[in-house]
Each structure stands twice: as C-alpha cells, then as structure tokens.
Image (cartoon, rainbow, N blue to C red; front, side, top):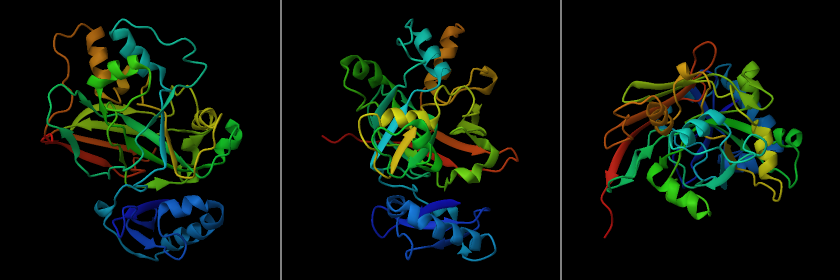
Length: 328
C-alpha cells in the first residue's frame, strides 16, 4: 500500500491512498482524515485502507499530481535517528584522528531530533544568513510505527513498523563538534528534516524488505552530480527492529514515531556517499588539496530510491538551498 498527504485544511494535511503507479488517488476521510489518525488506529483501519488501495489498482480514484504532495507525516510525535553505518562514522572519525566509541558495534547510538514540522519533498532548505554553518544533506531511510510498548523485543517491535520512507536529515556540521562535546545532544546541528512524498507498507517492498532491513538503489545528487548510489540494506549494523527495541527499552514509543538509521554508507566505496561530510572525509584521507564544498545558496539536492526494476519507490526529495536574513 502507498500513502501520501495533500495540503490543508490544517497543518497535518489530508491523507490520500495512491495506486501502485502513482497516477491515481483516493482521499479517505471516512477511514482516516490524516495519516496520524490512521497510525493511531492502524489495526482497525489498515484493512479498509488496503481495500481502497486494491480498488485504485483496478482503476478507481482520480488522477493525481504528485508534485502537490506535502510531507506524508507533517508533524511527527518524535524523530529518533541512529548512527548504524560503521563506514560513515569510522571514515569521518579517522579523518580527524579520532577513534570509534567503545561498544559502537554492540550497542546502538541514537539521538532524538526534530520531528515537527517536517519539510515537504519540494520545500526549500532555508538557512540563516550566516557564514560557516557547513550545511549538509544526509540520505536516510526511515520507518514509521504505530504504538510500540515499553520493553518491546526486536521481534515484537518489528510488528509495529507500519510504513517506510525516505528522509533528508539536514545538518549544520559546524555545530556538531561543540554540541557533542557538551554532552547534551544535538540542537542547532539539526534543523528541519524533509520527507519523500510517498510512504509504503513493508509488504510493498517484497523481497527488498528482509529482517527489518530494506535494499534498493538510493541515488543522491547535488546540482545533478552523483554523490552516491547506495544500498541501505548493505552494511547496516542494526536492523530497524533492533533500533526500535533499543529506543523502547525505558519508554513506550507513540504512534507516529519516525526512526532513521543515520546517513547511509556502504563499505564498497564505488557506491559513493550519503552525505558531504563523509565525501570530504574520504577526500581528506586521500590527501586531496581541495575538498568538495558544503551546500550553498542555490544548490539543489535530489534523493530517490529505486527498486530492482529501476522504478522509484518513494518519489523524490528535490530541495534547493535558500538563505534567509537573520532577525535582529
């Protein structure tokens, strides 16, 4: 099943079920007016949403313009993000002469980021008009849950993964070292994130979803230049179920929790990078005299993931950087 959201009437938009080819859609206010409503009562409403999806794939519904889609979940109750790709962290730390934290491969690393509002897939990345923020994108795959109980095991948590999507985890790299050193988490380093326009249920991925990991070809470009073509399922240290179980160790997770595994990174360096920080770290280790720049005014970031047949799975995140004067 594929789901999206249209604008209005309020900040959470209107839920729309879309067909497999993303050409037709059905609004379903009689089932769930918003995606959050569906997540709150998923067990009850999912069969009815699936019926609408089946009808769409047989020709029901109305023609849609996917460029009108907003973030599918415009206000997430919480966004949790991991660092579950060892290649990403090891390369960046190696470039600055640091080691990986003790137990990095045995215990997940997760922080709580910005869940609301979520930028839409075509919204500009608005940056304060300041120098030296080191703006970066991070190509991530996310899962969205219904309510996960306190103390859920990985096997139990997997049953609460209801939807899968893509995220641009926007980062101001200049703030990271200072905020990490202060020991209380990331605030200024992590502004608003952007979601791809379409979410899918795990069964929609077929054989590409195995043991709570998703495979595919995740393409990252800046100004039309390839930065990476990555497989999010390769080299992932912890499954999304294991990450959820770790997050639920001391608290339940509300329906509408969004969880990422961090910037995607593959050990096969021919696949490129899922962010500019890793690209610059590799260039540093290779002795490059000039490093690739971070994002600047007017730069365009596009992120999309494709299945084995070359079809886009989640639609495209397509954002341009815009600076905004700082308020006095």
